Length: 498
Image (cartoon, rainbow, N blue to C red):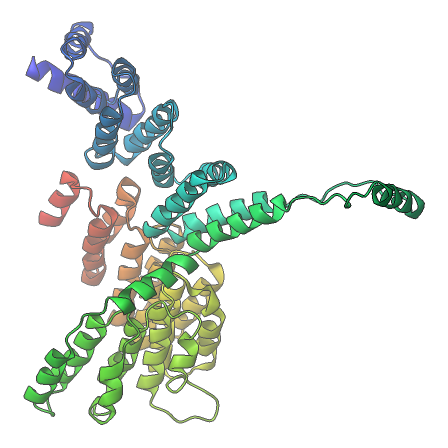
């Protein structure tokens, strides 16, 4: 019986992958059906869910859930199997769509779970409609809408959230009311009548204004303003770092040891990430100034880690280090400062995007361009912004090894997880350049672009892993890892091992 079930499931999976109708022996179908019915009769519903999903039979999944009278525990189990154990992305999306339909049939639909499923399906319009629908109910339902928004933001999918925000903004705008113009005489008569009866003129409750305020709160969560502010407050108030550790490290390390000097600066940045506490650096400015060249670049960029999320004051904090007209500062400090701005505004870079692009255009030094490209990539992460692509492309065309490497990586950051066609152009540029650094940067950019794309990245993976250039084959390995991140896909693991 076990062999029959395995054979049946293998045939069904093959048919689902190829899109062809499965040619299955009726006797084999009968055996699996009997086993499925037996599971239902004996109340072994989780096993029945396993048979339904392993055999790519979503009708059977609906039958199990209906038999279990839409038990929430059973639905949670089925959803967990869909998310964690289904290897094929194509079938997983079908299964999640089915789960959305089943959850909606509950007496009290779990909108949080439904929204999460729709996010995986990239259905931004449906998510926006759910948020608006829940928000309009008011009371505790408004709090539920805010919680859904927080959960969506935590998943860090900027492009998806931007689409949700756009749809909510369009719907929440009050439609212009069509009111017939009344003559001044009629208005005076109406007001006089109201006064003669001792009544106050009628006033309309500000429902539209209240609705707009709730929508603004929802948008502030989805756009990251509220979560970032709360996160900063939490990190600052719960900062329990022991500065004595840093002081002991500093006193016990030789001053001439640049590697340990940089390590202590980075340790300080990671210990105080997002807390805005840069006391250790301010107290040791002379020691900090001993950093040279790329160590100085990293030391300046470390400020961006400490002040992560300082959106309103980020540019002001970095002003002493940023490039400016007539200044003759260190290019490493200037490049590090631009990189720091990207770290501060990572995933929320609309406020700093134009400044970074202008800095990139105005700079001629490759170190400053290196920092500007990295900052621009982090600020525009996942946005797929065509203007940013154009600026980064120009840097790659300049054929500067240091700046071109950062531009290649940043092109991947801007399109991270989108799987767009920019990878074709990046591969052409990687083959045309004579600089290994640029090739490496573009290879890593291609890998970032395919983050989480699974089977849709296979064409690019095959192209990279069979390329004659060892650096591009190296990039192909990263592409496999990022494309199948967290999937436990055996096929991807075999490609990495063999």
